[in-house]
Image (cartoon, rainbow, N blue to C red):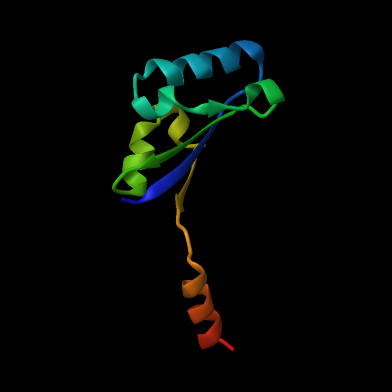
Length: 91
């Protein structure tokens, strides 16, 4: 199943930050309740990696008010053999 990295930014003011974190946590979504937050380091974002069927399914996990600013990127891994084949074909 595809894996996606989701980054959800929110406002940095303390009350706005607390509201955003509360909203994400109270969704009850297993994914969002296990998100990592970087607010204590001054970077006001929630970050998660999920395994879902599609980018649209990943976006559906996010509460509607945060979807428009969320970054969703499909993740993949490469093997050494795949890269050697690729390089051999292009050299």
